[in-house]
Length: 305
Ligand SMILES: NC(=O)c1ccc[n+]([C@@H]2O[C@H](COP(=O)([O-])OP(=O)(O)OC[C@H]3O[C@@H](n4cnc5c(N)ncnc54)[C@H](OP(=O)(O)O)[C@@H]3O)[C@@H](O)[C@H]2O)c1
Figure: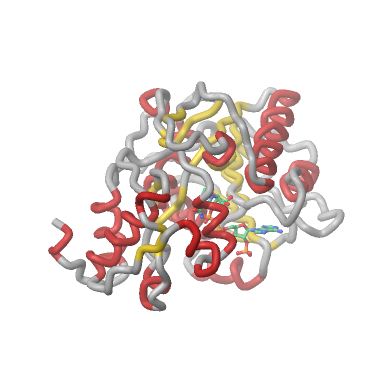
């Protein structure tokens, strides 16, 4: 694979966790790379598979400038989530300060479709207005604006990828199914999109390699409710189907995090994916779940077909 990163310099992947690691594996060997994480254990794991990595906690009040930055920084992919409470992303703000005078050619920021807010199942695309409702979505909107502002001042090409729920190997609700956790019944929940982690990594690589800028929705093409997705996982994994509960019962049996997620629903489409030169390999969750289970060494049931 040719180096998808424009220019000759290095690519910095900040917040190189689940998605970042898969992106790093794609980019490894195509050009210089540096992965940034919070903890020494995560850095050691990346180094263990040959990915150059450094640890730096961006939640420290004044993280030092990134002195180890490659001088010829070509691009940044930022994948760390916002920290804690409030409506601002101060973690990202500190990262931008730590970049010092670096002036990459491209900055890719991975955001969420939560910035569109709750549309009660109506369709959103990149032209739709943002209306973040939950604090975590307001933090994302704050982060997007910070990235666009920072890049604008420096003449850096910026790409915002808005993504729905990420799933893939080791990111399936298998533990919840094993624990017998119920799901919200379809009548009480709206549709939602997802993205397989490898499709997201491919979209990040595409955003690095193409001279595009602005907002792109990065989503699969077959939205379904969380209950339908979880039932599909259970079916393919050969686990018992979860009990379906009403919204009223869900208040006492589902976690606050899941309830907050379920309060919003929207259908996500993209009118710009062709520009990005990207289409999801896992257009529907059935194929993505199967591939994930296979990678985890499972033998997906044929019942789902
Ligand atoms: N999960 C979803 O369904 C979903 C949906 C939409 C968007 N997103 C967003 O997409 C992005 C990628 O998601 P992911 O699941 O790949 O993320 P992830 O696996 O949770 O990885 C997060 C990364 O950020 C690093 N990080 C966290 N706090 C940090 C700090 N204070 N200083 C420096 N680095 C820090 C972590 O380092 P350590 O490992 O050392 O802690 C880790 O490398 C995230 O922004 C996520 O919120 C997720």
